[in-house]
Image (cartoon, rainbow, N blue to C red; front, side):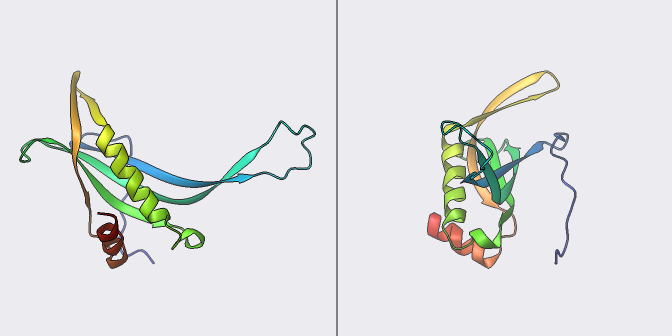
Length: 135
């Protein structure tokens, strides 16, 4: 049951922010008997979970302005829960934020800013516990 939900337009950047989604997939070897060559190995992927991220500019943030990334939704499908995948996704998000500066173009103006904060919108108790363990 979902209490409330809003549509997310990933292409919209009018309101000073933009959306990104980070997916986690599991890679499986395909045991396809139709492949005749050993060197040709095929794979398929299963979705394990995802995190939706809203990026917005914080021009007056102290001590320095930059981009704030807000985790809006996080979902790990039941077969992949309690296996460390949430922690792995959180670590990857932090690694991306540390090495990435964000370049945005609006009305023919290009600006570059670094990610200065990652926060969570209305976290569930289990997500708060995960964040406390990772931080």
